[in-house]
Amino acid sequence: LRYCDVSNNAVEQDATDILENIPPNIEQFIASNNNISGNLPVSLNNLPKLRQFNMASNSLSGILPGLTESLAILEELDLSNQTKGFKGPIPEDLWRSLSLKRLNLADNRLTGNLPSLVG
View 1 (tube, helix red, strand yellow):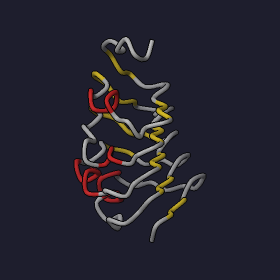
View 2: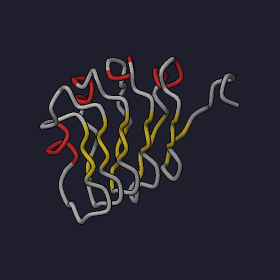
View 3: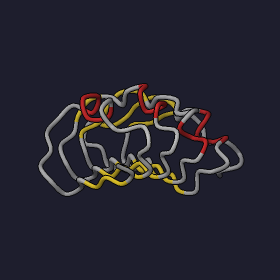
View 4: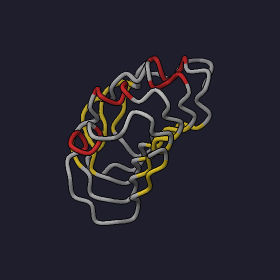
């Protein structure tokens, strides 16, 4: 499985339960507009071929994990519009990624400063 889109459904499950069972060769995972809750697990680092990750408009919360291993080819990360919201600083590895072309973290509870290269 390389592409999975389960967006705009009524999925009510913990993010860890879903994401720990994704095949390692997945390239695009889209699960926006559901009711997925909980924290993002560290197991996202076990997805080295991931190019697009979109879990916008869910009920995710907690601290954003570092995604250093997944960032090797990650081009799009959308974690916007979380009803509970992520908190804390944006991980530094997101700013250093050379492959990341689109980052959407709108409507969360993030804190800290943006690096000078962004704004």
